[in-house]
Image 1 (tube, rainbow, N blue to C red):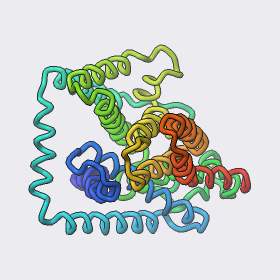
Image 2: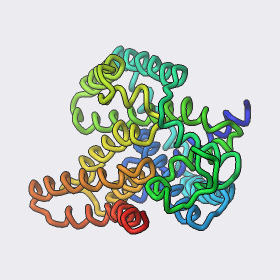
Image 3: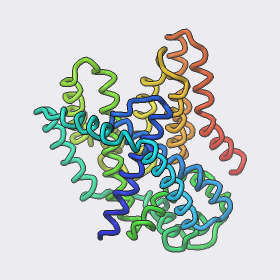
Image 4: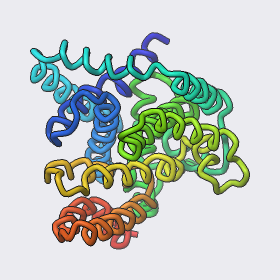
Length: 346
């Protein structure tokens, strides 16, 4: 149990936070906004896993080697962050703590209560459906056999990688298997109890960052917005297609994460970066989000670049700046490459 707790805290909180400190520095973003640091760090960690695991799948590399390379890379980045900020940590942590302390407000407490209820639901009342047969099966096989996508989860027989090209271009299932391997727990637990909680926290952090932009002059409206959003999520299960359904009941699935987390993240990064006074280097955040879209599901490789292209076109017209389209095109290259690989190899 101790190993599980330490491993999960290490991989979901400590490493993303330290990695995020480097990314916000690279992007010249707000170093003292812990929410932005954490989101930047998390999308960086999963983007790195995506970039490492895809060539390893085609090379039939063992899962443990992928996990080792990924962890070593993140630890190196974390050490760099610790050393780089060695004389600033006290000041940074004090300012980040002050920003958290300033949240004490009746509406904040109300929102936190709603969030705790949602976390309890997604952790305890797990959802199972037919998608478990493949996604959970392929992750469980990688966890048990240390081989990635080499055995059919339906029959247990050896299978051809090319027959699964739609799935192997997304690293989410292997990511879950790697986390399970590191923590010493079964992928079923990671899929159905751990990842929904992590994703739900990230969703509300992303919406909080979006609210910071929309309600920049009135923080009270921000918490009203988040509280109303929480209520809609809690009571929005009116069909299987609503956002609340995907957020509250199917958040372990890659397509649900795309709908509930990645698409709002694309919109937020567009709001942040596609402004006249933003630096070019801040587009690295948009690039990472596009890689994350590929990481969770093959649908992300198609939907994410289309959404970004629409947002870029709107802002290029609004700002009368064609360079927005150029940088947006560079950012969608990972998705276009994924789509091309699917078309060529299927």
